[in-house]
Length: 263
Ligand SMILES: O=C(O)CCC(=O)C(=O)O
Image (cartoon, rainbow, N blue to C red; front, side, top):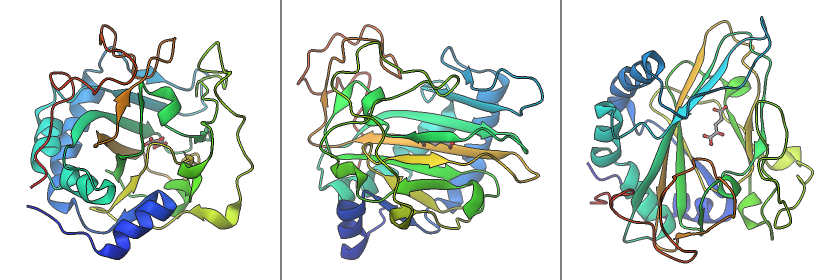
């Protein structure tokens, strides 16, 4: 079913790089939970545990499983998600980039550090949209925080490895250090089941630890629109997409990143 965003939502997305869309994916949550549990049971080759210290909780992530997880594939191709990204980015072509799951056990102190997604990726462009969809009860305290307007920074911020805070790349000459986070511009809202946060790949975002007494699970899914092109970052990106065989400036290949209907 096509969802029509308001002009104000589209303007806010352009201005802030983030919007909260209420009650948009309610019919899909159960299905995404089934897919999430399948990945937990049988993680893919990219699965990562970000905490190595005993009794410090668990922060698990995995990505690029949608081709083997029917529930994720169904969501990507049949939910209103791609159509929403088409509207917020003014794109007439939307492709799936990949999906990502995150799990933080109750009592896990580890934060997801402030970061932009784009510098980890092998793409550049502005017509991007990542949905963050909670699959468990989430409050303001353990929800996603986003620095509004940070998609307009003149340069990308140096990416790091979440497990040890070391630099992701050996060569960081194209990146700047993390700017000061101005709390008054931080988007941080209470979020309910079926709601989603949509954000540009360039905005700075983070989550706190999980101080709640229940596990926190979130499903992220990332789409690319009209102006997105491949970029060779000279080193392994995240996700790595080994063997992609593109040159900087090429459109992303449709056999790996299929177009998704936006109607
Ligand atoms: O859920 C988290 O802790 C991190 C989410 C995130 O960074 C993302 O969706 O890009």
